[in-house]
Length: 257
Image 1 (cartoon, one colour):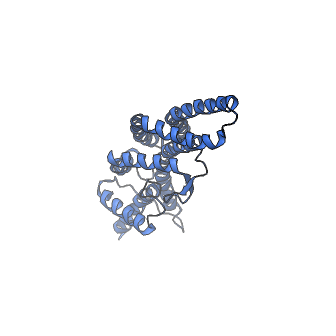
Image 2 (cartoon, rainbow, N blue to C red):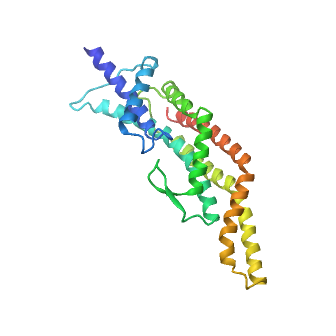
Image 3 (tube, rainbow, N blue to C red):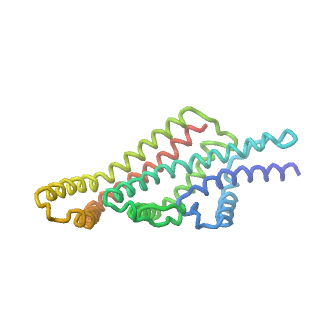
């Protein structure tokens, strides 16, 4: 009987880490995915990796099993932290699209993002979907599951401990997020700035031209043209971001034990 209870506790710890991570995964953690699907997928993955996870003695002392609850909270923190790494880099991709959309004059042309339920720029959503497409083509979803399996060898059950390196790594990734956003959007931003300067010169030289009516379609057209020209470079940027995600996950796992 004691062995059965111990096995159930181990499985509960595994599903706590996998489930917490599952809710932050791109696509699978979206709002449009039913909760029952997320729970079922987390339970299926937990059941699959249960035999290969190193079992530990789970303490369950106290009237309310405080030690076991503490173990569960540690496992959830591991899953949430790893998921946060992925969310940070995806925010960098979204920041790229948001910056480009604002400079193209499309800041008010918003749509509802089905994944988050928030209003986002059209350009932001297009660039985000392109990144997700590249992410899936590169088998990023398989990598995330493999990273979750590898996490048990790097951070054993109940082995989570808070270190200063976790915060330092998070700030480093936030810095990378801003670099990703500015680097990818800089070509469009630079060309649109030149376009604005030229429009200002035209407004001063030929004052009869309705420059306001001309500027909006011109900014959108120039922005779309530059986006089309730098599309190969943007794909390379997405590949670098994918590599940053993979490196960031393992780096944060090393800092948690």
